[in-house]
Image (cartoon, rainbow, N blue to C red; front, side, top):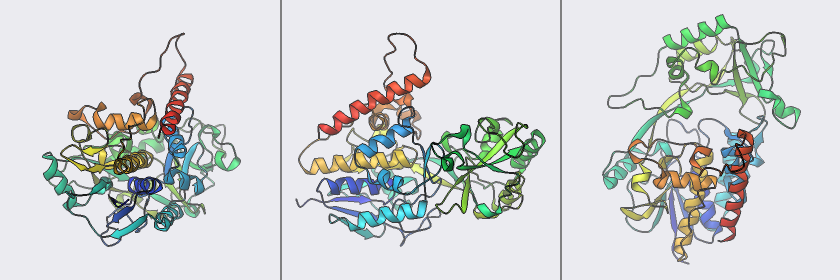
Length: 445
């Protein structure tokens, strides 16, 4: 076999696409501009670097759409999911990983594969010949983004994504804070105590909201619009939507009991999640922000238990780009106007590490099948992967297309014959149906 798949971008999607294609026996060249050309969000030149959260979110494959996607990727021998499980950290019911060892392990596996070669340097134009997968993510370089705009004849859409701050564990006052996962989730004591919780009284919460609203924020550049993706809203934007919004979002106090004062019910709770294997770093859950650095330290130190906090990283905000996939891509993830080019990952308008890697998995397999003279049909829409690819390649309304996490709302409805189902039973029915359909899809290949 002499034909080669070229993949632009070594993030979650590009890494998974390269692995799947190579495992199918097709040679791959993985093009990565880092570390020669950096971005403001990346710190290393490793593949699959996690630049925001260190969590792959819920690992419940029976009643959660993200957990189901974990299961499907595992069933398909996905590199990202296998490596994530090898480097997991306690996080209650979530799958969180030690980010640097995870990325280093993915990089090592890809570089060791006999059918994968790596070329460093920036690709600035959409190639006209050969088999290509564009998996450049939301931080697609300006030159390549311009080439994509020129080819598609439409402006790439944009939204803003914010990064949450990371705190040194030793600087957290544990006489105020306590360790507990919400509702004590987890099978081990380590899992049940995976989060650090900082309680707030009503006056403390009100003062925090006042400071948050008054803090200096990052200004947008001329011509940019603040079109946020709702799954990753900056906390100050949430606060602007109503003073109680945060208390019903990332600061909700439910499922938690103050170990120091069990008789007192907190008005709000800030949670921090372990960010590395050593347990020396914790990220503030849901606290993506566009506050300026000085304002961040002042406002976050108002949180009880974080008065003397030391920050390993402060939050930030950046512009993300994605294409209008329902208008531009066919069901093989190929650009309609230039079918030698596929797109995969966040640049297609899926949101999240898991979703990005899953679309890379499909793109890699589809490209390999095409080189073998075959056509790999997408997974059934009853599966998590199938629901996502259906959404981005035609299921979504092109005029209002926005980045989307996997969720059961994207799946064909479950037949409710025999009476109404409770939510938990209904979700279990979705995942049972999906696993059967995905298993059959794999078996047919």
